Image (cartoon, rainbow, N blue to C red; front, top):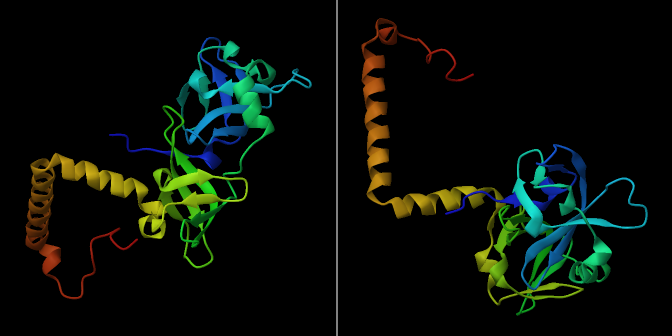
Length: 223
């Protein structure tokens, strides 16, 4: 089970580095989204010396997405956009994703997409972070709730508002699922943690200064 997703905002501006020679090939400038697959198809880079040609890296050429850089095997991963008709079509006729309004089949406006979360291994987009004036903070919606990607709006399934979840809770929800699948292992870990806590508490109570009146908590507890 994969537990970590990246956001599009984190990806923007990242350097692209060749593993073959360690050279920086440019920085990510623009993402090309394939809405039919709901995935990042490629990204353009601001590589110098290409003049009017737009350099692009197909996502299939990405080796890894790290905390500080995106790596590819070698410099040849950067290609001319004009040599890749499918990607060129996405670049010339893009459908908006960031900033797009999300509306359900029933006509309920959920808000606008301010970011999205994707799997760095294959570029697949799993969640849209949606901002609405009626909600406090962003909410995330799984992309399988989206049935149509249009120029003016994204159409979500009827009742999709019930599937919205807090963006900050994505990782914890995934971890909870992992813990549930672990079954008894999760229960055992909780039992061990509780027993350790009880042992530490008993030890603390036996210390001489813990019996003094008006003593505060141990140093650092409330810092």
